[in-house]
Length: 171
Image 1 (cartoon, rainbow, N blue to C red):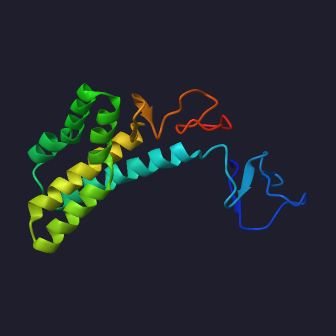
Image 2: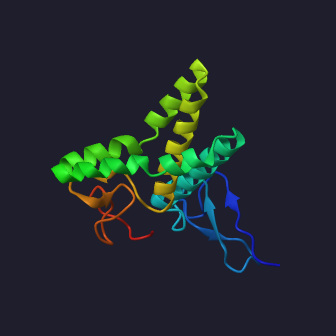
Image 3: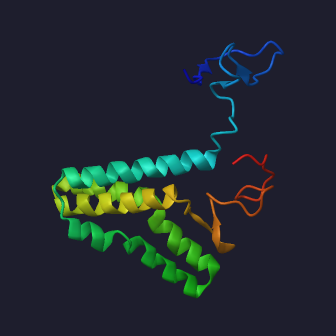
């Protein structure tokens, strides 16, 4: 049978610090303590998985509500119209592009739709949330004012994270 990845909860290793260990007979499969950074789950990976989950959940809810497919297709790329802000320069472009690509607005719009009974607002919020999730899943993040390609999900180079700080190199 294939080796099974397991997690040990709490504690420290024999050396007095949290380190990866292997389970006897498990073909040297790493076991990581909960809370210990793993080489396999970099924060950008977690954010991309979270984006995929948001896309799936918002799309499933949209379909479950019986909303029209044509509306989903019409609105799916609407938040990307904000990229036209880059015509005014990178600082303005990043502000205008980042604003509709945060989850605060679609959550607020969905809550407004639910509280007022306006189903169309809920549909729009779900399409918007699905768009944000899809962007995150494929690696498009919130923009920095230094340029279109610099986001919270990308690195400038292999040794720095998006904020320009030192990075351990594991992706």
